[in-house]
Image (cartoon, rainbow over all chains, first blue to last red; front, side, top):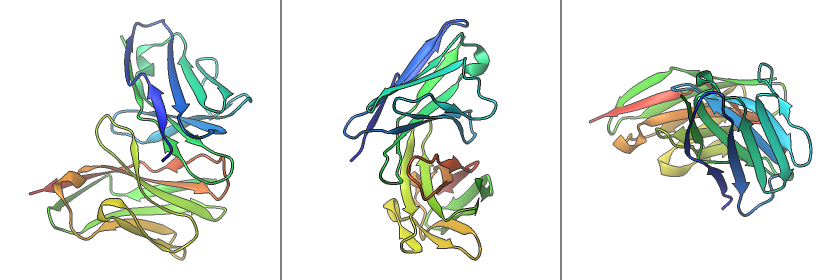
Length: 115
Length: 114
C-alpha cells in the first residue's frame, strides 16, 4: 500500500534555530500534500495545502513566513519551522494525496520540542 | 465549508461492551467521511471510510460505521471492546474531490476497563 515516510520522528532544537521536516511518498506520486499540527490531547489542525510545483496555501492564522513549505517534486514535501520558539513545540503530521482519487496517506508524525 | 462534531470527548466502556463513538458532520457538498485511530505519539491509522457507496461501512479491527444522511451522522461502533482499543479516535470529513483536505473533529478518547 501507499506509504509516506516522515523524518525526523523527534527533534529538539534551541529557540531561534530552524528545523526542517521531510515527507516522502515512497510508492506513489503525491500531487497534494497537507500539513497538520496537533497540540497535546487536541485535534489535528490543518496548517497548509501544497500542490507540486506551486506555492502552498496557508490556513488563516498560520504564518507563511514562519512555516515554509516546499513541494518541489511529486515525492517530496518539506516543512521548515523558521526561528523556532517554545510555542512552536507540537506534533506535526503530513498527509499525501493523489490527483485522481480521494484518499490520504499520513506520515508517522514529528514531535518538535523547542527549548 | 465542512466540519465534524464528535459528541463526547471521553468515552469509557468495559471490556466486552459495545463501543459507540458519535460523529455528526456538516457539509455543503456530498461528503466523504473517515474514522482514524491514534495511539500515543503515533500517526493516524485509517479504520474505515465512506465514499458514497454502501452506507454501512466495515473497517478494520471489528469496527463499522453507518452513514445516515437524514441525521448527518457517521457514528462508529464495535460490538465488543478490547483493551487494545483504548486510543484516540478522530472523525474527519472531506469533499468528493481529489486534492481537498481532511477536516478533523476534536477527537474522542476511548478508555477500556477490565
